[in-house]
Length: 325
Image (cartoon, rainbow, N blue to C red; front, side):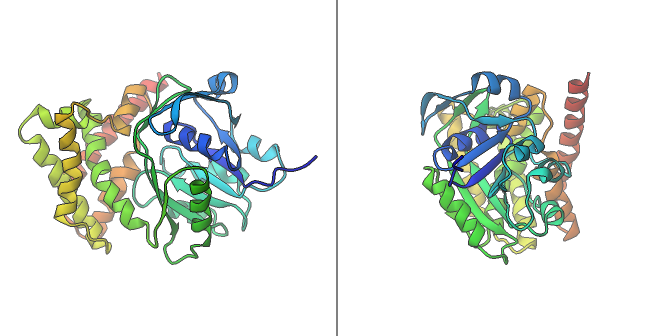
């Protein structure tokens, strides 16, 4: 039997973002997806993708498995890439992907939100290259198996740590570019992680706690927009303490993008708000908790972020209790 000469890829986490990339990569690689909550429906009916960029009503039936052990058992060849595209929840994912990781061979790529998320993978897989990615791809999966994707798709890619060889990050970027994705390679992608955290650490917990889109939150009261900006400035202060400068103008620009949505009546539903509405656990630690801890470690004042962390953690606990009932 002739083997597939294309790169062998495993995608862990076929949610909205993961499924769009699963579809694109299926054109240029041998790709398998680990599906969890959506496994039964995807195994039976596949996905339907409605994308402003890549087409409407795309019926896509990929190879799916329940876990990484099953994925590894299907073909003795090692995976060239394992792409982690699930929620960034601490201490669980390295253990779940371990059965499919071949030391010295498999490149692990994180397409996840948050800051300070990479070290647990370095510790778990010291012999494997690690690629860190910042993603801009607004997508929802509602109902299961049906993906709606907006008008943005961009990956910002870099090696972790930044001192590591860029060979594997470059190969990863080239794979995505060949699939029709927008892939930009950075010498130090952490600068891009901090920049995205401006929006993530403010809008995600605020919208989840208030059940508002970003536009609805700003319209709710006169101090609301100022609070968002103050939180963004705390993120700037923490980033600066770690050597990454984000100017006040850049923070204002980030906030201005959200303000524009008020006038266009097109508020965004951040991922944490989507998770609350769907009864899923939240990325509190990766997006807010890690930032607070990193700030405190450098003596940076971040009182508003710390308040959001406490409140969002309580909300996450309640969501988890509701799911377990």
